[in-house]
Amino acid sequence: MPGAICIYEDRIEEEVGIRILISSLRRYNPNLEIFAFLPNATDDLSNWLKDIPLVRRFTLTEGSPSGWNIKPDLLQKALEFADAAVWIDSDIMVTAPIPDQFFDPTAPRIIVAEEALWARDRNDGGRRAKAWDLEPERLLESGVNSCVVAVNRSHLPLLERWKELLGDTRYVTAQKGNYLDRPFHLFGDQDLLTVVLSTAPFHKTPLEMLRIGKGITQCFGLFGFTPGERVRWLRRGPTLFIHSQGPKPWRRQNTAKATLVQSLDLIYRDTSPYTLIARSYSSDLAGSDWTKPRTRLGGFSRLAGFGSIALSGLPIALAGEAWRLWKVVRDRAPR
Image 1 (tube, one colour):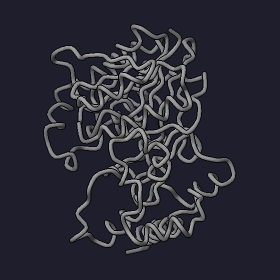
Image 2: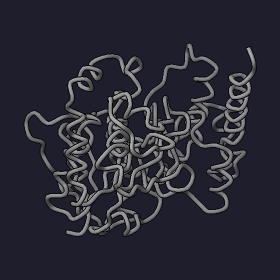
Image 3: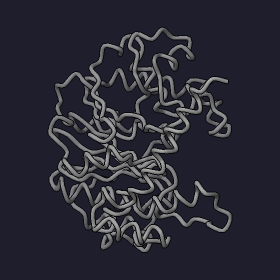
Image 4: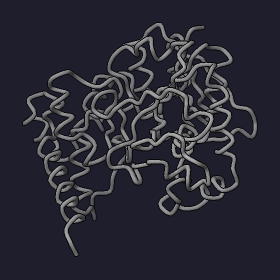
């Protein structure tokens, strides 16, 4: 088998994302096999999957990791059957056919995503490797985001090294605490993948990064779809991957005591590219009310966008950009 998609979800409340991801893959990649690892799938999801061709269900071995720590394990499993595999997070959709280069069985390079612009500790520059008492041999301008990872069998040693770090006592202990209190180099699986790609011997592995606004749209709350990205969208169309990070748009939100930022974020979710495109998959969803405007300003912003995803929510994006610039000036001001 030349290549396959590897997906995973063990949270029942996030099954909406799995439906959208699979539906988008079927729309644009109807001949692509999907390896689905869904240990807690509801009967509704299981029955829905029975009617979808080329979805191959897998079970996990006892003692396997879960959550984001499972990625290298599942990619290794997929590579037992396919020459190349692409991991895609369950809160992502595709907007076009995935190019053949993602499934090249002989390519030495690994494909990953660029970390979101507003992510905590986005910059790397070897910091994560040094925090692990390792010498950085490759300085990355940002940490990688493991929401999309494309590998082939030549990368099995790299995946094994990633698993080794995920099993390290320091990381395992940090994961037991509050995620906001974790050290930047132990925050999640992608920080460890950054370390692997920064240090010997895998620093020589060619790295192709899906750039924000070019290869992937990171819908990271209020600041997740910048004015610059919107201009590019108008000129060249959507990015291949749309990633709905942070609180998911299908979740119910308590707006009674929302702060100004939280209120703006709710409006943003009404106009998020992910939310707007998800409307086209309503027939595959158990419920799609969340794709309709849930705030008055969100609904007005959709109308003001004249049907354009790039223009819907533009005022919110401009407000976010103004806030970002203000923070830059504030932080650089002499004290």
